Length: 87
Image (cartoon, rainbow, N blue to C red):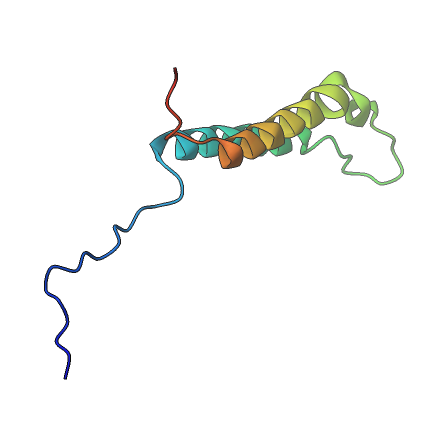
C-alpha cells in the first residue's frame, strides 16, 4: 500500500484573463453596443413615404466604424497577456 505524500502541492487555479483583459473587453462591448444604438431608428411610420434620415452620417459612417473599433478592442483584449513583464 502506498500512502499519498501530504506535501504534494495542488496546482494553483488561475483565471485565463486578468483585470486588464476584462477592462478592455467591457470597453469593446460598450463601443459595439453604442454603435448598434446609433444605427437604430430612422424608419418611416408610413411605408409609402421615403425618409432620407436612414442615409445620414450617423447610420452610414459613425455607427459601423464604432462597431469595427469595438471588435478590434475585443480581439486585443483576448490576445493581451497581462503577465508579460516589460524589460
